[in-house]
Amino acid sequence: MKSLKTLVCVSSFALCFGAASMASAASIVRPGGPGTFETPTATITIKTPSSFNQPIQCNMNFKGTVNADGTATITSMEKRAGGNALCGAPKMKGTWTLTADSVSTGTITGVGFTVASLPATDCGPSPVPGLWSNSTNTLTLATTTALSGGCTITSMSITPDPLLTVTP
Image 1: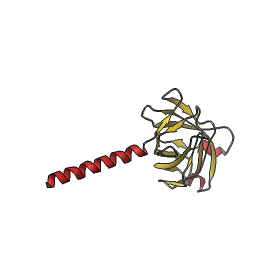
Image 2: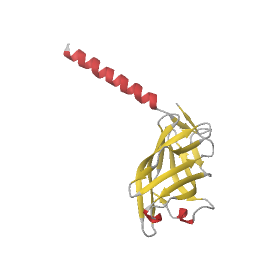
Image 3: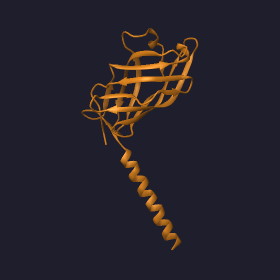
Image 4: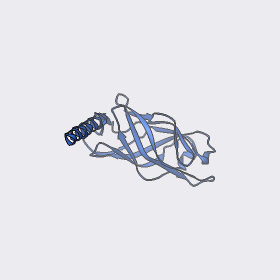
């Protein structure tokens, strides 16, 4: 009898855990299926030891890929014309992964960059919470986020091209 109660309890836990996992699953979708995207109108505002913790707004172009598993990866970032000259200094560390937690929230994991100028900066990798809007096709920062290494991202607005969608 005790083993039957244990089996029912374990089965119920597994069923509830699985249902909760499925309820929060969402996918990033690109028209035509998996493939590349870029963000020609992205802006990000950061504070770093290299900027003496003063906010610097940067116009950036992030490039990446939407993957078959419903995630997306950012593989490069480059300064766009205009904006603060210091924005060309940060060098992206590794690959950043975008995961949709729901149709309106997600997380960018692995966010990190270095700046070689004095004082040198080595930030992240750290997770960054995001908010997604299908109606405006925009990923924004959910909250000011501190990265390891003394850096802070205070704002972010990323609009991918082609237009991406987050589906439940």
